[in-house]
Image (cartoon, rainbow, N blue to C red; front, side, top):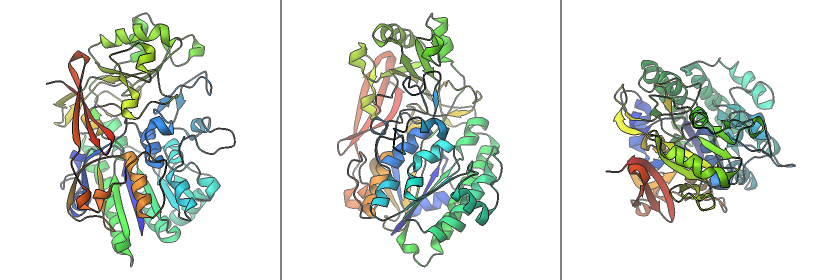
Length: 475
């Protein structure tokens, strides 16, 4: 038994329709589709990579956001986890991983099995998917790689990597070639994982409803799925190869930007990107911005009070609400996101379910400098940010099934390890038995928490785990 995992970055489940994604739509109908699959919180790419790799949520693996501040590691600026060099600063002495839990690659290697990673994302994303690859002699290649054995092997077999573009269709085609012409036939790993950068990239910079996003980016991602499925179906052991397709998060349209640091400065707070620069509040921009406070005891109340009064605030979250005296703040532990590296405070922007100008439901403000207004964003708790694609087809998986049980990104690694007969002790995620056993499938329990300012948090509960579903306006 072996598995191919395709991650289509940023794909919303409601965009998987036959008109634009015929290959994926057919695959979903033929296999086991998880109708209640969710991302982790914050619903950001590198957090998702770490959660997929470790089978755990950020409170355990420690990659608490795409952008972090750690004065003990890098006191003069924010850590940019998109860059492998910044992530290397988080690796403890003598180690090779910035993550607090062993990864899928490590666990497979301990059982004499192999993981191979092909990545079209950032160098940081690729690193997080298999940080121990060098030590274990494993295969990890990213489109930005120009040095090393993996890059040389890819060049020799498939030629030069196409340049970056928006949409990134040429690179998506190249990723498929690397997987089907090199990794799968020559390396034959037990688990091959490919990270596709679309439609996330086009969604950010062109918008979800743009013609190029729908007609080029989505089509390229769908053609990749079709190519890989066709390769699998042509193999003599096709019946023993399971195909998993998922997205790491969804996206919503961002109709306007809100600079949290500027808003705080206008209110009299010294906000910036480093405590060394004289700031008292360090702000990491995003769709769920994080705040680190120089004097948390003195600043938490005033900062939270200011943020709670803003029309663009839906909810405040805190690493330790009790210690900060913030009774109304949601604890990050509720989302499995409380870690010493997590921000003191996080902000969830107030989103809407109403359609964007292109007719797609879901909008929310955001705080990211390089994404234009009207572009798509993710990271927060909007229903469309948290909802993900997850389907499993072929191999041991059920045919034509819609799985009712809850699932998130941290459930995939323990599921694959179970199917490969390998232990997953220490992983937080559940084994998703409903993917192959209909008797194990059951809908989750529902929970709704009323929040201040007229909002509510919807969650699902399954086998002792909570799965955040949406932050909404209370009815």
